[in-house]
Length: 149
Image (tube, rainbow, N blue to C red; front, side, top):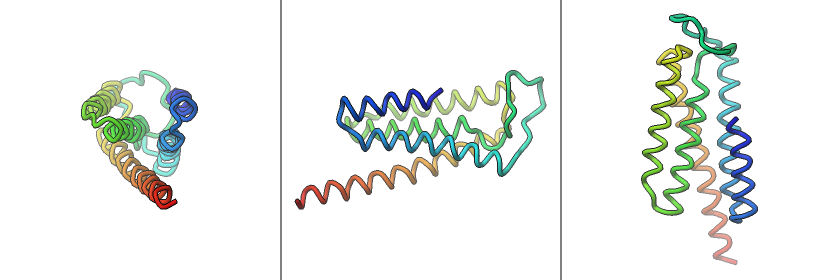
């Protein structure tokens, strides 16, 4: 459900705001997080908790939490983008709250072990840092080339 929203936001950033790099950055973060979720679950294949009867359809493996991979990487990428563009700090509070709410929901629904959540956050954090460094260094090189020309 998040991918169509990111595609729409990306198209708006690209076409209306003239920010293709931001659009591609958000799309790469989203698709990368979704891909890591599928890859890690396929490789590790950990059983979901059976403490309570399942509430919903959970056919995939438990580890890591894909919700937290995506939430951590995407919300904090957005917070970093808003910090750089406007100097705002409040988006980090929103991103932190979204991660906390997601953690709570995954535990409340009994669909993840606590270690699944920690693993998902760590993978999301690594993806966040790696993608942020890649895009910001590319943007810095691009701006430097423009300044020379």
